[in-house]
Image 1: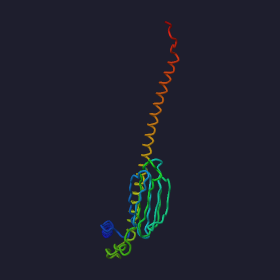
Image 2 (image 1 turned 180 degrees about the vertical axis):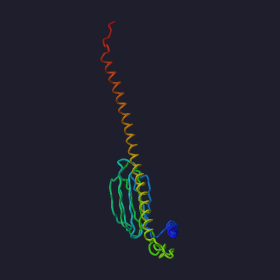
Image 3 (image 1 turned 30 degrees about the vertical axis):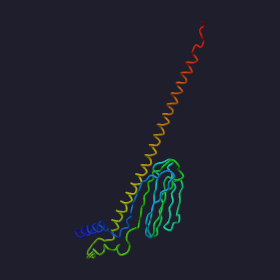
Length: 225
């Protein structure tokens, strides 16, 4: 058990050290929220490597109709996909070397700005080649161990992947919550506005009816001199 504990500590030090464990295929997760003014188009760039995976998920959190146009371009400038008047979307693609461009277009709206959340998940972006086997250089006398190193790495990799997925789901839930809250606040303002309008109309109608009823019972006969 002492050798097994020492081996686990060694692997943990290697995998969570400054260099990290090259054998893990760890995804990089980045999310952003920005405001896109009316009549504007905003583009972003992401550098990718060959045989990597790029996943883009976006949501319109606030703004009239909660819709936006989305475009994705390859490093050579070829349009890969386009979506019009969508409130959200998820896209995954295999990448090549170069800068991928994705744009959010709000030019169709002349008055309403949009609050947009998007998340980038970059997979298979680690160093390739010999670095994936660096951890084996630290193992001495592996024939004396009763536990396979591959099993330990597979377990740690599975835990890290699940933790990353949990973080991604929590981020998406926060985005959904923000969008739902904006919708509720917008509905609340609309209800208050139209309630005030109805109240004003009722008061005007009430005053008009009282005036009309009083005018019906007024004695319009003029007294003779």
